[in-house]
Length: 522
Image: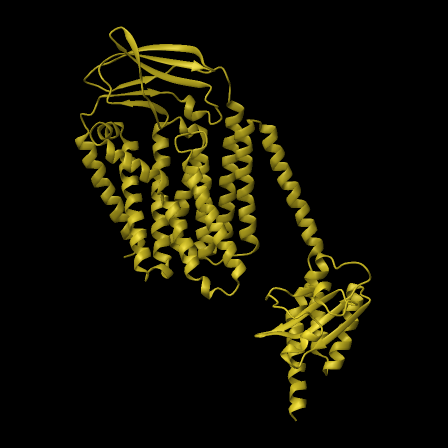
């Protein structure tokens, strides 16, 4: 069954359950809703304002528990009678409102209180940052337009991701309708990405135990999404469940908070990565991949700690979705290297700027972080440009080595070239006939695959400062290039130069090794 049909089935089930809950909760009116756009609209409000609800009982005021609900505060199971709302700013009473709850209708009260602090500048900067982040993602999408058109199943989540970014701004949070839209888009995006990754996880399909665990997690996730999305869409449903099925509601809240789509997706990537570990050629890459996925899982769990705090959750959740989406996309189209590193660097910049802004509430500090990021990356660009090895120069050297007629000419020409290019005092090239011949020059120990340039402590003859391994296929020591420098250590670009020529030089050395073996046999 393809992903579209699965999405249709799960959405249809949600609509049926939502319709049923809407019907059974139609008369659930015993709740109070206190509407204030301050808590949601001002992302950087450090809880200077506190709202309290009291009920008048026999001439005494009894505190009533309220909890955040979108941009409101809500109390479920409210009894009829007189109530008092208190607003305190910095623990000082700022305003009082007397209200009365009737039995027939729910009470929805709009606060007219406006705090003294003005956050217009903060909101403008934050929304501008969101727009830049959105434009950056559009630029990335344009870069991968061919891959997107080739795999059209990416188009739907891309549309949802763009909506998710656009709906993550301080103006939207003060609008209940748009806030609900944000949460529904998030649910649809999470479900689609989860089904997409599950469909692509070939390595896990034949593992019965893992599939059972994943199905249990999916059911927990789906139950939480259905119940909590229904409660978000209609206050009466939330009130009905809180009054009649509190244990089910608490269970759904737990599932909704801690078992979301992104955690299951990352867990599938983690398990798939473990599954292919034995077949991985480069173990270091596998370890880094596992570490990266593990860090994503930790990030996803940390984000959930802020779910009741509008100041942080919406933005952290948006960054979390963007990170995971691009990880899925870049993995799916097998795009690695510079574009992946650059993408993650830019995401880090946006995330760090946002976090610094939240902590400091200073536009200038945030702009300073942006400026520092750009300057450091500019320096990195120039430095890496300076350290980049000239490909044409390498090819010219290799071509000259290919044109040599015998091993002695190869050794002599290579020695001259390296002396000239690296300004070395002496260069000696060795080609080994027997596998263990290297033990006459190097210490007898196990050398890792990625140990190409060996330093003085591994060389028996202390005259030489470096030994460069020539290796091919299963032979770890086809030969060695011994280098004696002029009392100056090799710098980064010189080592990169040696590493880049080694592979092709090893092919030439292997050819002459075979010729020597043939001579000995004859």
